[in-house]
Image: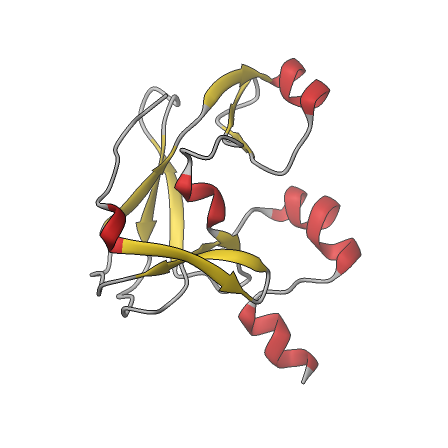
Length: 137
């Protein structure tokens, strides 16, 4: 469950357009590892039973329940035009978040949560990512 723990000084949790978000405390290069999404691995059946917004699908059978406070990656918000992306390891047991482009200190980390999650959880309430917020102005 503990995975790769980055230096806590590399980022900070603070208020964003979508609630709390994870922000860079230093510059990041394109393709750089930001953090691992950690938590208890649960079956798809268990994930359906417990629900929650911190479930990250590994495959059709398994999910990571990232609701624990030790999972700092849970603060990375959805964005329609993200600056990061998640990547599964070869065994489909771990999720790592990498930068899609260079990220400057002070910038919020974001990734796209996927079409299914977007349609079920985000769309009914309206997307609050930065690019969608600009469209509404």
